[in-house]
Length: 432
Image (cartoon, rainbow, N blue to C red; front, side, top):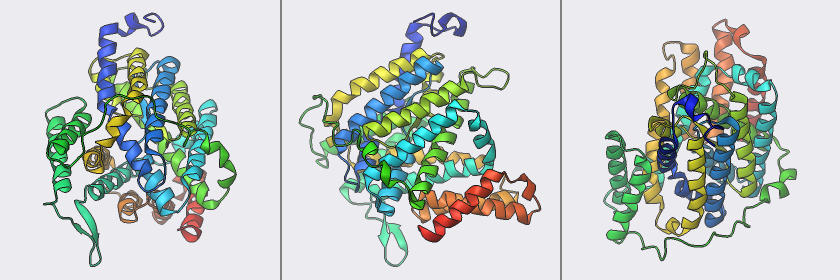
C-alpha cells in the first residue's frame, strides 16, 4: 500500500494520511444529513434510502478516486446539484423523482464517455471562464436562499414576494443560533466547522425541546430498495426537451465543478506538474463513475468536494487519504437514526454557509467588461429569483453570444456555445 501510493516520493506516511482522511470526512460529513433532507423534501423519495445511497455513493466514488487517480480528493452527492434535482426538476417542473434519477444516470454516462475520450478538453474550452464562475456563484446564492427558507428566516409575502420571517420563533432562533455557531467555528479555523455546527445545533434543539431525542444512534442498514435501480426503469422517459436541459445542466455543473475542485485541491497539495494535472483523465473517470453509481443507488449527482482541501491542509498527499475517508463513509451507513434530529433548522445553517463559500467566485469575474458582466449577473441573479438553477444557466448562456456579437467579438464564441444558445432558447420558450 505504501509503495502503491508512493509515500516516499510524496514525503508522507500512514499517520499523516490517516489524520488527513479523518479531517476530510469531518469537513464533508454534513452531506450525509443535508442530502437526504433536500432530496426527500417534497419529492416523495425515501429519506432513509437516500441516506444509505449518499453514504455508499460517497464511499464508492472516493475509493475509486483513491485507487484510480491516487488523489487525496473525496467525492459525495454535490451541493447545488441536489437542490437543482429537488427544487427545480421535481418540485418546479413536476418531473417524477424516478425520471430525474434517470437523467442523473444519463448525465453520468455521458460524462463517462467524455472522460474516456478527448472530447472533455473541447467541452471545457467551449464554455467561457466567466460563465463557469457565474454558475458556481449563482448556485451558492440559490443554496443560501433555500437555507433561509428552510429556517423560515425568509418567508413568502403576498405584497413583496419575500419578507423576513418570525425570528422570535423557537425553531427559527435555533437555525440562527446554528448560523452564528458555524461561522464562529469556521472563522477561528476549526476543521469540519460545518459538521460540528450541525451537531451543536442539534444538541441545543434537543436540550430546549425543539427536537425530539433520537431513540438510538446506531442501527442496522436501512432498506435501499425504494431507490436502488429505479433510474434504469425510467430511462424511456428522458426523451423530451425538458429532460434534455435537465441532463445538460447535471452534466455541465458536475463537469466544471469537478475540474475546478481537482485543480484547487491538487494545487494546494503541490501535485500540479508543469501547469498540468497528472492523471486528470483518471480523476474525471472516477468522478463520472461515481455519478453512475450514485444514480443507480438513488441519489443526485456525485462530484468532487472542495472540502478535500482540509485534508490536504492536514498533510494528505496521496490516495490513501481518500481510502480513509471512503471507509469512514462506509461506517456512516450504520448511523441513520441520527437523521431524526437533523431537521431543516439544523441543516439550514450548512446550506447558508456553503452558499457563502460558493459566492466567493464573484471576485474573479471581470465586472468592468460589460460583455461579461451582463451574462454573469443575469446567471447569478436569475437562479435565486427564478428559483431555478437551469433557468439561470439558460439566461446566461443566451446573453453571452448576444453580448459578444454586440461588442464585435462574434468570432470568439465557440460553435458549441451557439448550439447551447439555440437549445436554451427552446427551453425557455417551450418548457418554462
